[in-house]
Length: 252
Figure (tube, helix red, strand yellow):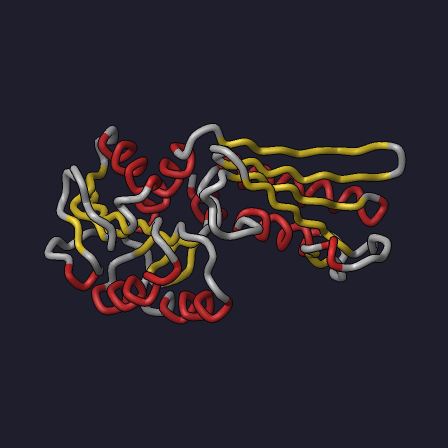
């Protein structure tokens, strides 16, 4: 039985993870980490990883970028693998993750949905086939409580499309701040925040007299929970390194 600690256990994703893991037979939640008040939580909850009395086999993090340092220190000092599913990291924090992955196993992805990985693969194929004859725009939609914009998944899509097409391609935000025609090297990214939208990502290829749209819609946070638990199970016994969804899918 794999023992999992949930960082951010008092949040919406933390609660979704609790439910998802409770229905599995290969793992269990042994404790949680959260600075918030742990009401009606079925497992012990600590403010920081260093305070944990239990020894989890793996940690799944759905908290906040500000908690990263404590997770990295704990992982490196104990050898405990960590699934980093939090978004909004700075470039400096991403560099810290890469450095820590030399001493412990980490799994990092801006989106834990297998469907999103398929969207990325299809988008890269389309970009390679269509070339610069089609303009590329990314539209992402999320609930009104999401803090970061654009979403980490939108950035992941943009980076993948830049790699798969013209090396001069680059993401463009805040297009309203300049008055000029669209450049062929642009990949526009647009954020929508409203209501209870779980997550929707569309990649639009707009060409001469025709458009192609690839879209992924998440109807429940459950798809992200399931993906992160699968990632946690994948990390058990892994050597130090930085793993992602590509590694998980290749293993399947």
